[in-house]
Image 1 (cartoon, rainbow, N blue to C red):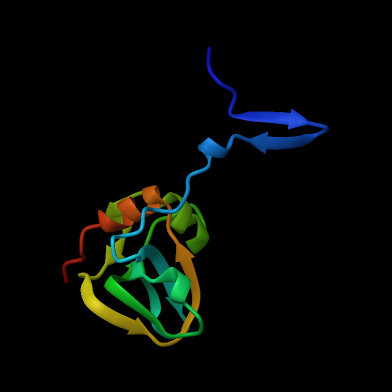
Image 2 (cartoon, helix red, strand yellow):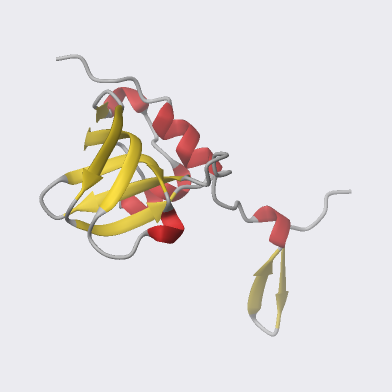
Length: 125
């Protein structure tokens, strides 16, 4: 018998806690895989000290500039579900360390999303 994933009580739908995907496991150094949007810089994905983000300057390790991506709708969806078709994405080579100096949004990625973003091949010119 299958275990139920949801239950409805008084017209309120509840989901099982173990069915909700948490964020990707942080690295040993505590960095989490994130998507960072900058006002002028554009969008970058990479490893960030998410808990230390406080303001517009965000340091990213192994960051990749995201020129084009294929997601369900917006960046929040991309951070949750990852890319749909990596062949439709255009990402740069990873840079060892870079700083986004005009960050306006930082999304912590789920394990599924982080894996799919990391698997996007680097664009060739």
